Image (tube, rainbow, N blue to C red; front, side, top):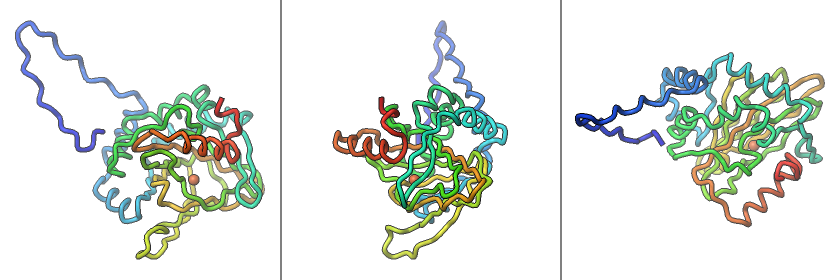
Length: 261
Ligand SMILES: [Fe+2]
């Protein structure tokens, strides 16, 4: 984790020693992200994140052209969207990590971006890392395009030994549906705070999954809402029992059994 890391002074080079290799250049996506993040007021962001019990809405983190490319990757995958409905609780389509790994390289690059992970680690004050490859939720797309598509209130409960954090990024949203957030629900001495977020393209929401109660209000006819979800953890290990529980839940409510083969 870069946060808090110390930079050692360069060693004195002796005669005949090889020159040190140049620092690794940032990939174009990381360079674009770094340029955006360089102008952020991190002190204010962190204060706000912690005041809201580990919840933040970040604007203009991703360049417009990057968001457009992410959206284009996702739209090309529409035939692969898998729909799941649970009466009274959830109805939506999704694309799981295995599909994105094969067909959406820029989304996977964003998920693994050291610049993004460093930002999230600095906000959460934890050394965050990506989830294991066998977690279909690790990077996924949620696709709402039928009247009534929604998801009821829930926590993104961590089945890992470490804390689990969610990043949501709007890719397309011409809908009246909103990400409904309820803050401080597990803090006895603070009143709940309600925040409804329109996931417009490029808007980024970041939160601790065990702390934020959230859902998505129902879509109206002839609307579409597509959101990218990225999951990070502070410790990616998991007991066999929690692994089994997580697999059954994801298979039933999101991706079907195909995502685990
Ligand atoms: Fe969620």
